[in-house]
Amino acid sequence: LVSYHGDSNGLGTVPAMKAVTSWWTECAPEHRVIIGLDANVSKCPKPGHLDIATFVEAYRQSGLSSCAGNDPAELGRTAVTTFNCRTYLQTQLNKAVKSNERYDKGDRNPKDLILFRESQYDTLQWLKDNTGQCTFNPDIPFPTLRFPSDHGIVAALLRDR
Image (tube, rainbow, N blue to C red; front, top):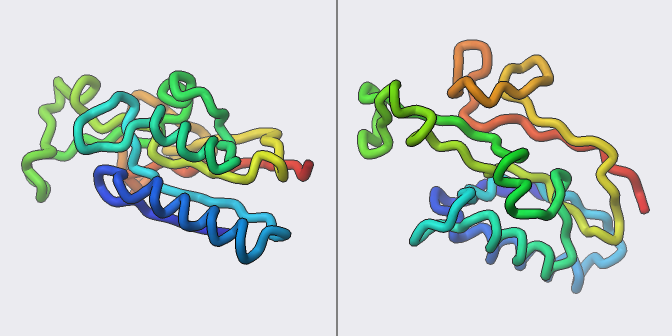
């Protein structure tokens, strides 16, 4: 099991993933590795940020698949795991969002994924949760008092190939 937390703009995610898959291929090819990561990708291309299409292309070139599928447009709709809106009372004022602008300016991106070698597993089911009750409500910014994380939980049921 590999766990990775990307830098704020996601620019270290692809090199880190390639390093893991290179090591895995060269040093432990018989092992089954699952990678859980906060890739810090964005739905849309932005200068200086890793976008979902670029990330999908990179992990597919490494022989990996995502628990949520591999279509960047679909991932941008169904695999969103953040809805953060910092207030003006928090640090990083440059990220603060007015409450009436939260849907347009909040951080709503598919940042968290589970990757695996496509030749080893199939996804039977996957889910995300931002409530602590095994459901995901796309209309509530989080963290909340009931769910104190700023990223949703991602879980997957995989089957050996």
